[in-house]
Image (cartoon, rainbow over all chains, first blue to last red; front, side, top):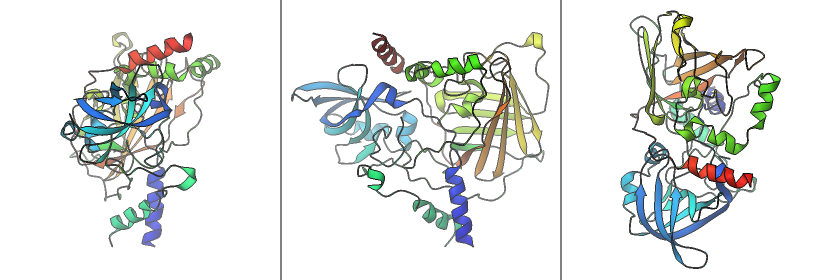
Length: 140
Length: 267
């Protein structure tokens, strides 16, 4: 009986709509079909709103080192998800890998990031799951 | 085994396994959230005047935590279609996705207004309620409003001015707080491109059915835009135990980037 009540409550609670709306729709500005793991040296963290940014000297497809910009989530989401200012800054001047999806407007080397593999090996969420690689919450 | 642990176990079973439905294997990452709903938690507290105390830090959704990186799909409630007048329907449907972005208060870091503090806000709320007053803070760009809950009338028509949150007054109907707002600045949206006129009348309802849950519903009257009154589904928020954090919008690159995209699309 208690299990039945629990299942009922759980389903009702999970299906109850979240009123949350994302800051905005990622896929309008960035192309979820043009995502890649990009490796380089993290050079700077800008921990700001509405989005934080990280900057990396990374290799492009031709093997050249170029400056890359990655848009992250808001600082509210970042710090609640473990991507604190300190956690990101600990990888500055170290090699990291970032999952980035390219800007649709043609700006060179501007991406939205969904995760970063920090210098200590931690894979850290930093943005929306536009590819469905973390589970099922796909923001379109 | 406590009810809470049982609920958590049951809810974890709802999470799809990696590889289902042809998806790529999931990346295990710090920050991803498996949502586990809070138990009801007992009866809601009461204020000294006997009304339900709505105070607390409230997260959208049922988990009492931030859910932006949930691994479950976002659920949208079943609601009636917006009863637009034909001209308004045509205008609403003409918006492109870039238009919707460039018109969004959150993209522009402008006030979300009423009912936007609930409908256009993915972040945490703090409510400080006391007899006669409802204080509503949201983390999203550090916005706030203060509403008297003694049922006082709106200002006289000649004294009204357009305000983003509108001219607000509230009253209690049993255990439900009803916030009534008029004279709302036409630059706000109800949500997602749903524009309104200067005749917008918003009736918001808040109730706390148990200690851990807050529920919110809003009704829209707008005789210049709609054919009839529309009421939302009840939306769920849940009690958190974290402080709000500073969230000022100071480095907004999205507007410039989206305008560049819009220019390209026009070529």
